[in-house]
Image (cartoon, rainbow, N blue to C red; front, top):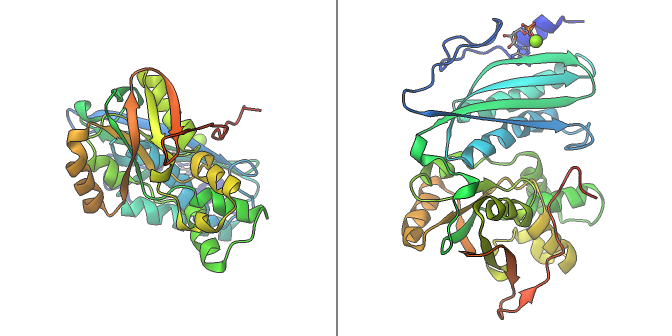
Length: 318
Ligand code: ADP
Ligand code: MG
């Protein structure tokens, strides 16, 4: 059996060019850029709650970091460092090798250094703390939406939830749709570059981890505003076209795990936001408007209100 220290040395120790001191001491030493705020976020993934224990470990390595990068994207921040806390049922070298490859492949793409962590035996749990930087005036906060703002989302919605429905046997997807939706579920693409490009343009932003209605609801609550969203404008994942209406609508409105960005911006920024999407290779779609008041109205194409029963995922909800 390899020791804990051998495992860390073999799988989680890489040069950390952007740190003063990385893995191996009692703590890491980091030097944030002068004049920037440090941005910190933690996200944890638990077996049997957030993923099936037999999920491909390379995908898990990717997703563990991706969900954290997504939080920094939603702040408009540049990611720089991460720590990784792991609870593992056993020292499975093949599993750790695949997991760390998935993790580091994404870390290298976004130039994030793994600078520390903790490794312990226990039921499989994966927790990353990510650290990044943002200029003080640039942070995209949930409380910054203003009446009159457009509401935008990136990418396509509902693909990850449809992939999960397929895994659970709730429907049978075509082979192509299944591959695509499972990729959305297991290997979400954090919208870091888009988040950075939106600084100075967008007012508020959030990443879509629990579903559009729930996550946009957080912006509304924190900003003290309401919203109108037009159902027909939502950029549905193409695979939803072939799916029965109730399930398709659930995936679109309340499906979690897409990790797209939802953000608000003044109408004067429309051309610049389209440019930001084009420059970062991500579709951006205007889906509605922020209004004075509270609550979210969902409108059909004819302008009629649609009753909202869909809520996002809530770990402590009924
Ligand atoms: P301590 O006993 O001081 O908590 P550890 O033995 O837990 O130290 O960790 C030794 C070093 O390895 C530390 O620098 C720690 O940050 C790092 N480390 C432990 N586990 C991981 C991991 N999964 N990924 C990255 N670094 C890790
Ligand atoms: Mg420790």
